[in-house]
Image (cartoon, rainbow, N blue to C red; front, side):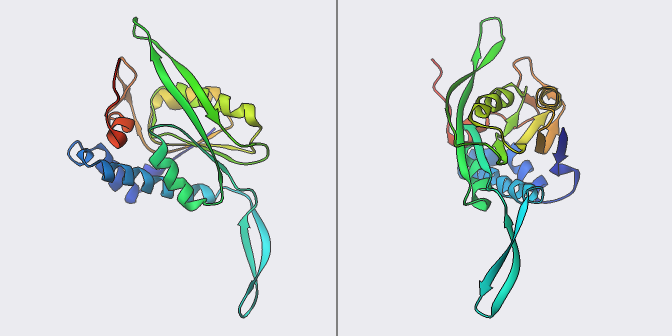
Length: 217
């Protein structure tokens, strides 16, 4: 298990994380979504350094140039709905990639516990391709590991990259135990979880902040 925390070095990542956390700036949904998208683009570039490349020759108006291109286009997956802006940022850089979508949610019980339900998976063939699965928040890690298990019914990827904006220490430990061969890419790591398994200080509900509050029956 490899964990790559982009906040270990000073960069624009810190600026975007600060804006995502700020309760006043959060009121601007467009900016919130845009900052998630920007982070997706940064993650996409950093991950591109870890992918396999093929040597090719390309004809220019003046001659032939030796070039390199991605050997196998990745499959970009996201957990609906909060992951959509982050997904779009990654897709902006891997514009020829195939895409997968997982509908997963917490089903809460009266005793305060919950389980992860997966309603639907839409996924191409994953065999021999890199899988990039993104979700803004990695609180307990259960949604992520459950979603990956659902995706793996569609093939065996060459490698798995988990992309999150904010993760808890507990969630990282859970993913390390469950998916020891995956790589976690994260922009910030927070220490605390509430009794209801929300990250502190975190940033709140990323899906609600991006798209509006859900109706609760």
